[in-house]
Image 1: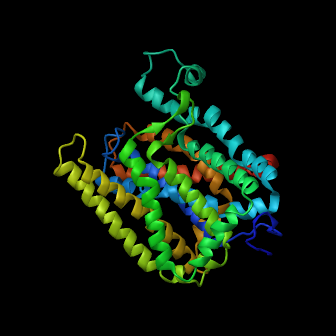
Image 2 (image 1 turned 135 degrees about the vertical axis):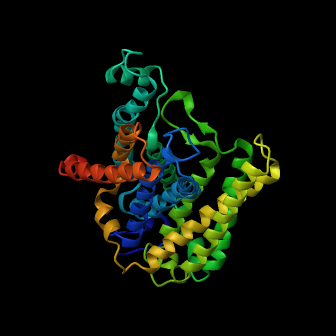
Image 3 (image 1 turned 30 degrees about the horizontal axis):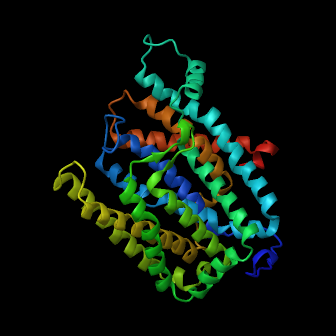
Length: 394
């Protein structure tokens, strides 16, 4: 593969498949399934009456990094795709791969997924709404949720911005790549810089808006968590910069300094997660449950941002370091991972609805939901990918 970091003159002969990065993307999608499978059995939410505190720790762990990491992974491949296709074709292809699935999700998949929630809180005999009535009311009256499809529209918007940058500032993305190349042999410096960057793009927004605010223009299914707008955009463009420096070289080299120090990044991530746990404990046991004081909100924002940054380094480095090891499940899931992401919410909510009335332990319910969702969404994706037009999309 030919690759020079010199703006729009870059040449890329063919798209690369980089196994560790494919596994990173697949791993995050598995974490999404895990997250949605356990959240109904936590004390955070108001779901099933059977709950387990351990699931709260899983939700807190995932929510503090995994979507930002997904934006980072998505950004890694943008520079090569722009160099290969040009801005217009790049945007057209992203609209096909992201925009069309988003529309199918919000108009079809998400209403099917949320119908059990309607059935749970509107018992038979209290309403004459069948599914078609529910679907029409969702689209015309609301609320009109997007479910996990919110990621698609935000990623598409960021892709459009990246394509505009590629056109308007030809050397802009190349400059990002040069910055990353400058620290390829100094991973500790890169780590510290990324920590500071994460704090800068997250902490001010967190302090202004809090972490529970969602921006949803006009009530349409285009939501994004307000405090994380700059975090997601920042990680996406950080990924573009790392990808511009090379998908097999620089920081992403399998035998590079970043990969060799994966225990260090993991250690810092666990330390920051421990800080998050201490702060959560303090909030619910030592602080009045009203508005936490500024020092608590600042401390939590710092711990969140640093944990998110450390996990990007830890997961990426571990997958690079052990690239030649066996990753059977992740490799088997890779071709279907995107389809699983799009379809899983239907099975998650319907299975949670199916086991709701039983007094089974929370872990038993989770196991049924997680295994059932993974197997059925995987099988359905494999079947759908036999249709050529669908295979080109997912």
